[in-house]
Length: 216
Image 1 (cartoon, one colour):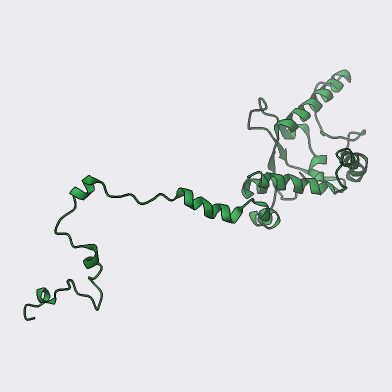
Image 2 (cartoon, helix red, strand yellow):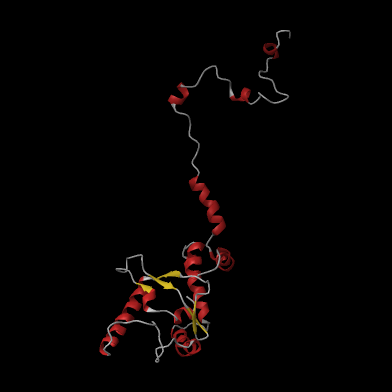
């Protein structure tokens, strides 16, 4: 997800599924927060970003904690932004980067990168793990598969040689004729070498020309 999509994330955008083994667990990305306004995603349309089991657990824990806070405050349910500011508005992206994101990088002993680099890491790990470019395109929200190919196509492990090597295992050796097939063979059928000689402008039906012309 892009930073603006994360800032605009609402609880009703998250489908947790019945349990962690339910494949229907995802985030529905349908809004983006840019320059203080909610807009449509960059692609111009909604998309689904699948939830891993671990991410599902983390978000459920966060939702439970928020639900408890809401109950104590006399509110009936958790709604609104998943990551709101103290005022209930979306977080400021610059403050989020310096106040929260950079400390996380230092704690993980990672070099300083942009938030967008995490998005690229996600796609790279998907593809290197065997995900198709089509799946990566859908998860990333690219406008076309060509964008995905241009950026991440080189990451497909053994893309060319692997497809070529696979032909060896799928090609089956030629089988010999069975006894039943041999028994059904017509004895007076023309041998293959004579059949190949028929029809060409300089070919004759048989090598013995006396059969073709009684005058010879």
